[in-house]
Structure formats: C-alpha cells, structure tokens
Image (cartoon, rainbow, N blue to C red):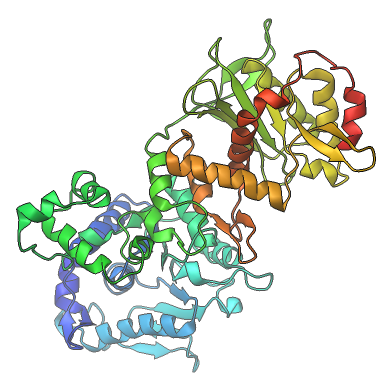
Length: 543
C-alpha cells in the first residue's frame, strides 16, 4: 500500500490558489503536523477523531479531504463518507476535489480494474460512488438534516461548523450528534470538525473548549499564523527593529519563538487594521485570539491572557462534617475546586450565584476570594446543578470553612417566587456573616438593610465596571481557566446591557464581580457574627 504523503505527491492533483494550475499535492509544515496525529491514531487502531480550528488558508480542509480519499481509494473498500457544511456549495467544492483526483489518477497506481471516477447513485446529486471501490460519498448541508440522519457513514467531514445555525428547527449540536452517532467506534472510522472561528459561545467554540480541556473525544488542532511559511519579511535593520519591539512583539519572540522576519511581517500586516484586536482575529497567535470578537467583548484579550498566566490546576473534593467544623475531603469527582486552603488569619468573601437544578439551566456558582492581601485572589470555587436546599448547606459549609467568610448571595433568583427563598432563610438562621445592602424605603422614608446583592441593569453595570477595572489593572488574581473562558464570552449587548454571548454562561463572571464589590464595601455591610442576628426575621421579607 502506498503511504499517504507519497500518494499525495504521486496521485493527488489539486488546484493551486495562486496560479490556478493543477499541481501535485505537496504537504506543507502545518499539514504534516496534522497528518502525524491522524496517522498515530490509524496505525494504533484507534478511531480517528479531530476538531480543527483554522486560521487563514493553509490547506487544512484540503488535507482532511485528501486523507479521507486516500483511505477510500487505497486502504478500505466499501467505506462510506459524509461531507457536510453550513452551505451545500462548500460541500460540493470539497467533493469536486475527489473528482479532480480521480480524473488525473495515475492508472498504474489504481487498485481496481475499472477506470476511477465518481458516479451518481440513482440520479442523485448528493450521493456518489467511487467506481471499483464501492465507497460512497454523501454531500449535504446543515439545512438538509434528513440526508445525514441514519446514514451508513464510516467517516464524516463537518466543515465550517462555527457558522452552522443554532435555532429550534436547526440546531448544530443536534445534527452533529446525529452524525457522530451513525459513525461506528472502530479503527479507520473518522470524524473531523473543522472551522474558522466565529466568535465565542457557539457549538464549535464550546466543543473546542471541551476537547481542549481533555473532556472530549477529539484531538484539538490549531495552526497559528507563524507556522505558515510565507508569513515572514526581513526587516531593513534587524538590530534597530529588535530594539523597538513592543510588549506583544516581545511575547512573540520570547514565548512563541518567532524570529525577527516573522515579527516584522506581523508588524507590517498589523498596520492594515484599525485595532490590534482585529489583527489578532484574522491572524491569531493562539486559539483564544482566534475566537475573540473585539467589537462587543467586555474584557480585553490581553488582560485575560495575563490572568491565565496565574491559573493552575486545583485540588478537587467536597466538604464533609468534622469535629471542628467542615473538613475538606479530596475527591477527583468533587465539584469544589480549591487552589488555597484557608489560612487561620486570613479574611475571605464568598459570592453565590444561584442557578437552576437541571443540566440545561444556568449553573450555581460559589466563588471564594481572599481579601486581606493587596490583590484579592480566587482561592476556591464550587459549580454545579443542585437543589437549592442542598446549595444552601454547601454555601454555609464553604463560608464557615473559610473563616466565616462574608457571604454575598445574589438575590434575583429569590425574587422570582421560586423555592430559592429557602436559601436566605436558612443562611439567616444559621450563618453569622451575611452581606446586606442598604436601600431607601420610600414609604417609611428610612434606610433599611436587605439580605443579598440585588442585580439589576444599574447594579450589574456597576459591578461589571469594577471587575473590568480589576482585570485591566491586575488587581484580581484569577486561578480558574474556566473563568477566563467565560470572560471571553462576556459582552456588552447592543442595548448597553452586559451578559454572556448566546449559548454561553456568565455565572462565574458574576460571582467575581459580586465578591469584589462586597469586599470593597465590607466595612459597611458586615453585621456582628451572631447566630440569628437580631431583627433577621424582619429583614427576610424585604429582599
């Protein structure tokens, strides 16, 4: 059997994008890197699973389609494939590559007796067969979901997934799950999701983050601009140019190991864009740059990148009753992340954002910040879906474990008439250090204290502004990489309000904003540490 790289140069003809001529397919450096991952799975007898984030045109789609064609033409007969894109024209262009390969295929290398060609099945424009191999190729789009459901596919190439719509009638995740469910988990089976980035919060972005964190089934592949060989330009005076490098360019040199010719090309190209964020979106250095949407992003990518430098792996576990109060029990399945155990003399603030109880609802999040140090630091976080009575006990235990931390509970969910009212009732009865806000009662013309932090359009803008300043100025230390992902998905809407992009969550972001606000006002909000503080019964109805 002819190996893939030799097959590409000998049997695979593609159209050169610069000259328009038909040329042999010679793999460039990024393509060889991706091929190594594909071949490692194939040779080990593992199913091939890949999600690929494309940056500009380095031939990622061409490589994937050529590899699938090689398997069908040289490795495995009767091995059917699916090509599905956001629009059918894209899928058809990918199929046309098959036709070009077969049209120019060297006869001496063809394994079958019949002349190689694509032949439509029963007059269909969507399904073709490679003569002599019994392999079918189905072409579809996300708008024609019926053609992909229940198909007999061994390989699936899903193209430009970030642009697939997610509506009640056409949901990208549902289509992809239907396709993946039809592909058997056997050697030589193959599923590839590839796309250029289209902002954050969509299915492709969420799946990328899931697989990048090791929770998914796919290898993640991203090719930065500096791996593409043509992106370089020699500076006129290398010494003078190196002395003029800005902070970002020095990171390109010191962290990403770019040489001066690459950095000079980057600087010259950067002058074509109004902002550096636009340049990063078009020519990303990292996968996170590829996903950013600068027009509406609430937090700058540079600031988030600085936060990520101090993120690290937490200890996982849960709190359980102990003779001297709650005790931490390590458990790799636990939902409590701990980066720093309580220090006996430290002060802490814990913010609680109350979510729903089902998997499709918002998460409940409890974030703990240490606040007696010059720069507040995230030290622990609990996140999950759980009944509110249990959440109340978890919040109490976490607060007590962290030296009776000031506990700031967002009260919006409680105002909705749901059973969440239990949480503040429980905490007011049992917890000594609750955050209370001061409000003015127009009827009594008196100021009153109310339990919890109430988020509305005005107060949300206020606390997000404070969080933006802290992230920009480096006056908060973040430890959680998931928080950084939420920062990137958090935007200012067209109407001026703040929130997560469609399909994304902002529960972690809100806990940081509330905790920082509560910490800055703690001298006004902390009541004496008494169980059942006087007057709490009066305070509860006035949320």
